[in-house]
Image 1 (cartoon, rainbow, N blue to C red):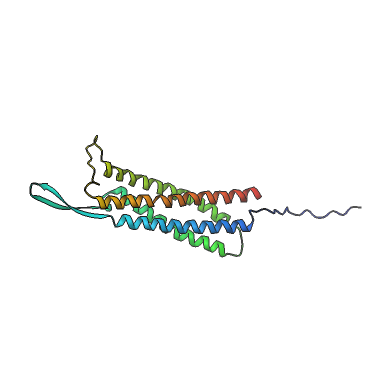
Image 2: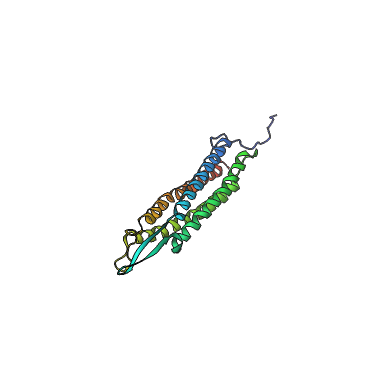
Length: 194
């Protein structure tokens, strides 16, 4: 007569256990802090981009004309998208810290939602950076075919601020891309184990 042991659920011993989940959450928090810091710097540099020059309008007469970021809809969209990224990074960063401190493991649902929202925000950030970059390029080079004159030869400081802000804004986009990759990787490890 043989004694059969009751069937036990398989126990998975893999490196993608709770330690890997905690590692994912730590990387997630670090990337969200980077997202916040770089987006905030890009906002500050863009919002402080104002320059006034005396532009000759007639012989012997010049008017002070200011160049500001809020005179261009693409730059306004850019600042709003960066502001949303800043606010989003604060909320999701706090939720990630709570998931790290929470004694029960398994923030799978949160990772899934973060992956979707991070991808959505990445698309918004990419479109805003592209729109602002396109307008900035026209300001830098002009367009002879349409008769749009370049303005960066007149408003050098303004254009330097725009270029600096656009350069820094690539970092939040990279942080969002890495966040999507990390979340998808962590989710794929969880799916492979189940």
